[in-house]
Image 1: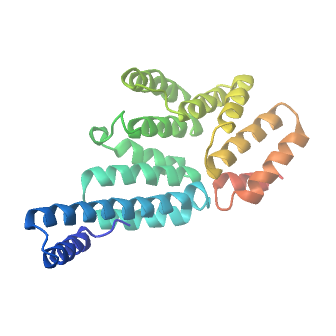
Image 2: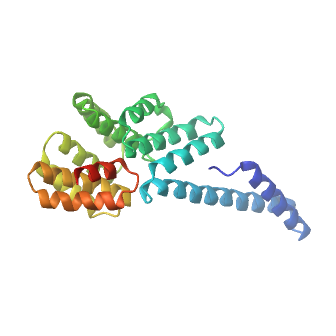
Image 3: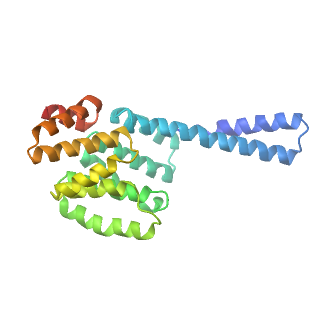
Length: 242
C-alpha cells in the first residue's frame, strides 16, 4: 500500500535539522531534505507497487493481488486518479480470476479523463475491455471498440505498445483466425514478458492445438499451465481439460 506521506514529511524535517546542526544554509538544507524525502517516497512506493503487481504477474495469485489492491485503495483515501489506476488493476485481477463480468463492470465505470495515451493506461483500459467483451461473447461490441478506440489511441501515440501484439492475437483467436493468432502469440513469446502472460498465451495455444486436433500438443501445453498457473482461472480450466 502507499506509504504515508506524513512519514516522509517527518523524515524531511529530521534530515533538515541534522543539516542545520552541520551549519548548512537553511535554504540549501531545506532543498536537500525535500529532495531526499521525495526520492525516498517515490522509490519505496515503486517497490511496493512492483511487489503487489508481482502477486499477479509472477506468483499467479489473483486472490492475493485483489486483496492487496483493495488495501491500497483504502490507503489512497479517495484520490480520484489513484483510484482510477487501481480500478484498472482490479479489473486485471478479476480477469485473471476468470470473472469477466465483474471486470467489465469496473472498466465500464472508469472515468477515462484520468487515463492517458502517454503512460499506456488508456491502451490497457481499452485492451482489457475488448478482451472482456470477446470472452463474454459480445464480439460485435468488441470489434466496434477495437476499430474505434484502438485506432484512435495508436493515432495519438508515438509508438505501438508491445501488448498490441497480444490484443491482435486474442482478436484473431475469437474471430477463429487460428493461423494468424498462433503466429502472433509466438511473436509475443519471443519478447520478455511476465510468467502470467506467458501462461495465458500457452493456454490459448493449447486451445488452438485442441481445435485443430493436435491432442498431444494440447495436453503438453495444458499440463504446463496446470502445473505453473497456481490460482489463475486458466490453470483450473487446464486441469479440467487434462
